[in-house]
Length: 103
Image (cartoon, rainbow, N blue to C red; front, side):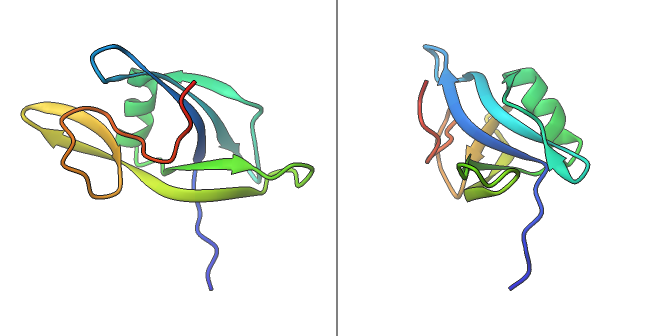
């Protein structure tokens, strides 16, 4: 099985009261390894997704350096004239990162 490449791993998410992502806690690829935890606001995450960066939901494996347990990929979709960040096939009318712990 081929190893799936990704540019970032979302570890946790914080939503605003209107259902939009306020920020996410993530790791970003830095060459052959990953960064320490970084906080990305919604606009920074959208910017990266528009640049075709691939982000997944996941957790770093303890004591395994840049190895992650990953789940679903993020998608940037258009719905009702708005940009939404979602995972999987969803009919949500707000951002929805299923599988990402809330913080």
